[in-house]
Length: 141
Image (tube, rainbow, N blue to C red):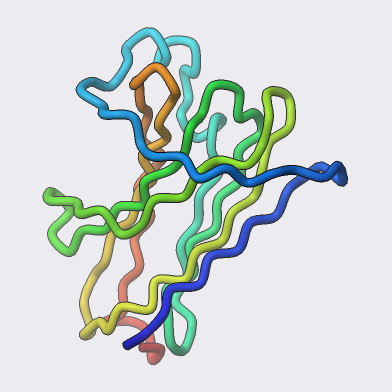
């Protein structure tokens, strides 16, 4: 069985307590939140890269005010996304965070798409840009 490694890096040097948080049930993508964050790419910077034994998913968030966590999602057809992992946010208000997750699922030579569902405490959510990893062009994995 392969283990999934998750690494959290904070932009703050202060001590913090990592509380176990569960995802708030989400029923809608907030139009208001989208209007306030006209460009979702400004709210979250996200990248996906193929490594020899995993896909490296890295994202940075400038502010985590009211964010409860991040749901990593994966798709092989670009339409149906499935949950890969849930990562609780560790930043506070004006302090953002950087996150790294290694998806060690075995893949054939295919195109894999990833996105992040940013979930707020009030149940609203926002999707990151979709990142595409084309393993057909890669000698990795």
